[in-house]
Length: 358
Image (cartoon, rainbow, N blue to C red; front, side):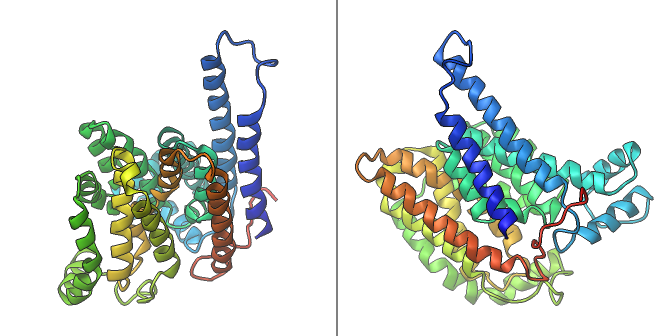
């Protein structure tokens, strides 16, 4: 646990230091704009490399780490495998460089960290807060599990930039590429496009009833899902447990959005994030019985990484800005401590941290 807390403090401490460092004496740049760009590139490189290396050098961390090693080895040997074509292709290509299956995990750790950090730097108005939420709400550490799923999630989050800019072709290409690594990414096409719709307040209020409707339709929906991925039902993943932490996270973001809806309604990206978190709340309450519910839910509520800082920026507060910021950091850190209690679980296996370097 101490290792993860130290990582959180180190990464956020580096961002804070770099953003408050006086570069005017040590950087010979012709303008403030050039200094800012150079600083941001340096900051991005340090944060990306730190998180990428920390993930890449892990050993036996994640409940499916050992099974991924076996799957990758079988793919490289040409044995039949259920995994998506894109993942199998990359595993084979990397295997030609070095047959050690760990190298595939290392490459995906680097790529996943890159797309997450790239999305944050291009979509967040407060990188420090976004990175703090990214780590403390567990999104970064969850990438140590279900490697394919979280790589696809990182690409889908990055694609939202192009949805906002109405570059639909690039948006669709990124989602389709992500789906070749994990097919669950395909749900982002209808979900993200729906989130891009300008809902009225009455339509948003109607969504409160959606969990009740979803529960009433449990039987036909379950039959449909059984057809799509029958292997999960009745397996160790079919626990039927309510994901309270994810409901708390989605609810906190939705409440924040409702409180300041008039301030963010003209910010297209904020509205998309807000709608996605409403969808996440409905999903986690109404479809709690779906096996591996977080594999779909994270495509929606992971947007809180960028949503919270962007909403605060839209508020343009003067008196209570620091109080609100501190409250978010405290809430996030408490959530981090509570979340890490679950990291020791055999079904998660994210603690204790181990590395193949030592």
